[in-house]
Image (cartoon, rainbow, N blue to C red):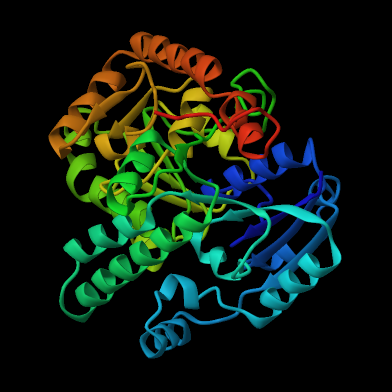
Length: 400
């Protein structure tokens, strides 16, 4: 049995955002049975620091700083006819590192995390290729195009079409194509015609996200509504903006003391400005998101655009908090009706108001959510299908 090359568009550590969380746990799972070599990009200075947790599970590690600007990536994409998603991650140093590693190490499997990294696959790869698309990004850009105007609408539509074409070609070269939910896998299968498409869902570390585990407490006024996420990510920005503009005022008419905390790193200027609204707090990066979740009267995920499984929802469920989510944010999660789901501002507002009105029922709902997560979403159970794709079982598992 040879080694594994893990290609990541971002260093999968620390596991503090959606893609890093999935990447880190996949990396750990792979390393449990084979030596793994990591080649990944860095986009945060902290990514370049030594991380013992990564060194302990990898045979080698090559991290390359991604310095290319969005403007340069867009210009290269227009000239070359490629998707911006690819040109943004096109780098000679990474290509050289991949070629050197494949020449010097006995690699039998290449695990590609996100389609941006598939450009580094050898043309005639003799290795097993596992392509972890995570989400169907082409569909995300189609949604962006529908919501955009003028040149941006054209650019987003172009990106969607080119990315779907690219991902379809890559899927035919891969032994297994993975998505984070059955809905994403089905959509890609229908749009691409690929047959070897499977869902490998995200899990949650219920020992870490545990309301009974000690952590530094945060003193929030009651009632408090909390949203967590990477706050320079467009769907998150749109979600909190919609919440502040259309949902929070309805809630504060019934609960005038209600506060809304937007918790997460790298807020855009538009997010910071939301703190000017009555009852809104923007924290920026926090030391421990569990404290903010635990202090919430209700955790919300009002995303209009969401792909795959939302870690923010799983984390809140694991912390035994009542959750109100949009239909898009809840899709792909087997929540067993332990969270409240709505589509319109009125429906979400009514669900939140009902939870704030009855703390005892809210606590019961939160406990039911934690039980559901512990039963359904352990990382060991969610990633078990990878063993089949790696050839550790007699056949690849079939995911319906």
